[in-house]
Image (cartoon, rainbow, N blue to C red; front, top):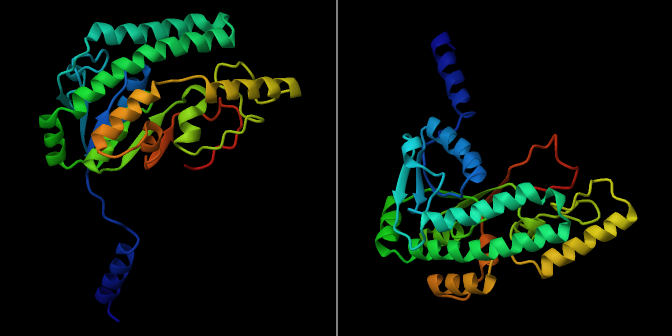
Length: 273
């Protein structure tokens, strides 16, 4: 066999080891402050790799500023919530997060629930403003996005993904009591090994600390409500035209990206989800 044909055969074999790729269209449902900063890092990398990124925002957006991200597209939709109202809840949450270190676990959790309750109502209004906007949803349908990226701490992206029939990817640090991760993401979080967030317990718990951790878990699972689930379940059912729930819809996410620095995290059995 001549050198020419030998080279051609070798080239054909090499092509079997490489798969072709293509640039996609990414829709983003953002969250504010540090959540946006973390997500922005992902979006900038996607743009660098040639993907088209479009961020859905309302006039209530605080830190998500189109003028500071020229390489990213932004789709603005009208909302019934003012920027002042939206920012107020985040400021309350931030203040409690900073000053709450000196408070007990129960005080921190009770305060957080009160703030989340108000934030849930505001977020539901913004979600309705987007989903019930026929012009916006038609435009998103026609844009043929490949995937939607979101932070699940404030819902709605999963509903948009369901309506557009596109894959959903979550980027999450953690939810109170790991509630989303456990019941929507099916992440195993055994209370004997994994201390509850804000409990100030370590991964080396005594028997009494494990009992305390179990009490925290039971409380967060059965009494603590991040959102007004009844309102969200009703809206999701109406929007999709069939009975469903918020957490059922969240459970359809195709991938959960957990934003952790593993060098600083407590050892725990985190299995792929």
